[in-house]
Image (cartoon, rainbow over all chains, first blue to last red; front, side):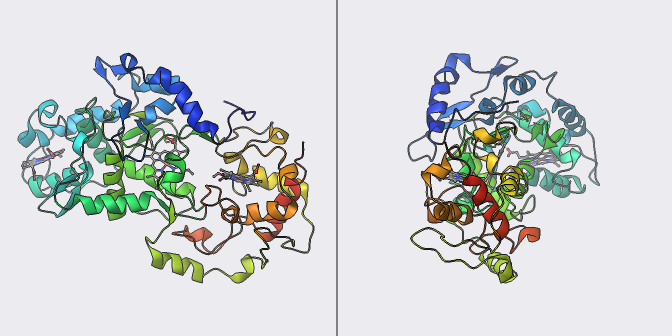
Length: 284
Length: 151
């Protein structure tokens, strides 16, 4: 709880970030989970819109960070465990499980989440992890597609995502027609929406580090999704977060899985390249 | 920093949104040199109601971005905008009215929302389409409250 007597003013934001970065950027002091280091800060390449790429982790309280850094306290692991179970459960008309084709997820799914969204030539569009999983269910298993925000889908994206934890986000935006999706996502990112007339960039690029009411603004990075959110008391997808941010500015949000959100996800992944995958991250 | 612009995405939705705006929700006013000298309504602004609108999250929610010593007992002041303390010394009433109605006329590209505007918006949620964040009277109340913030 804080009741800010105006110590920080606009413009002091950048200074505040710089002031803390001395400590936080100390590379020998990276957070780690079971010996796996999390790169919560990454150097921004030339021409990147941000001076430094910073995970949402850095903007959360010590208490929230601690939840993420211990798999026993991380409430997201309930769903991870259910995803692990489903991995080896046969379903659908082909009588197959994920394991039937992909074997040990720790091997076959390593690095997969870090590279999502990924161009899918046959579909002629980028596939998010959700898209790919449903493709396998309907085309390979003869099973029904899962709903985007269903526990089944969240559990599986969390379980598959976990196999990339600690690996740097690295999307291939050169593949196929990825560039046009990236462009569309970028347009979206800088476009003002809603009755409050705000763009993602107004909050997450121009004001990260600043408090907006009770919330400390981060760069709105996607490296921790699906994420356990204390406010939701639940795991949630990246697209649920997009919708939440659009609701807050009183904009008519797009649907989860819509082309608009897939484009935005593509662009955001690129903005966060170099950050470690933190799935399942914990946020307030 | 990249330029944040008024979008072209879903321009048709935007047009629809504007088409349903009833003109009566927006007071007519005249902008003179980046200020609005004349009140938007005939009823004088009430600073007590204005203070309420400044705090209320469903109305001004100004504390999302601003602090003010006068509102120190309210929790969670933001730090995106400058403290409101002393705004009455820095700006005259006509400029304060302009800042609340549409701060983009005073600060180019500002993050601060326009509180009494409906045109030029993108993808507004259905239930808010065509409605300004603050009514003309609420704008007058807020301005009356801001005028009390002198140091």
